[in-house]
Image (spheres, rainbow, N blue to C red):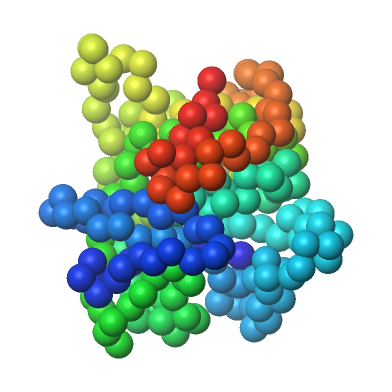
Length: 275
Ligand SMILES: [Zn+2]
């Protein structure tokens, strides 16, 4: 199931109150404008059926009986912003212990998260988004490090059933990261600079991923544009390095549940599930 941001120009999109809760959040675009939006969850483009989505609309009894199968057999692709992943997980806090497979997309450079036309083709907007225009424009957003950390906090501390994590990284890492210094340097400083002295505790996005415990979670690293043998070898080396770091930690996630009932991500309990 694909989870991404419903990104359309702010003026054309307003959030409304509905019976079903859907956590909303703000995204900053490439010139610093903030817009409030929420995520959408859809079957993958390759899947023609919406059975996986329809399960959310089932009555309580049937849902309780099918949730286990649904969560354990579905791979959740959080390929929008970290905020869309967080909001989605917050709305399913009572079932996070059932989640087993997740795929995260890291936008190394500014990238288009989701554009309205393609969202529109997939299906209707989320129930709490009111749209007033047929066509919109694309939005360009970077991954925010602190939101990425919070997303990993949830996976590390609140998903005890997690077994596989796929990490998909944009191809701009090929030109921006210090590959010539080896995979350890890419792991620690993927943007090629050591953090200033006062920010020495800052962790790179790969270090955040390595906080997952290697004994129970299988990591798969995919970097877009790995189209030569040399690049494929580097991906394997980096993947092995991160797996090695994961094995160094032993830590147990525990079952958590939402205690706030908040519909705005900035006030949601999920932001404080870290250590
Ligand atoms: Zn909550």
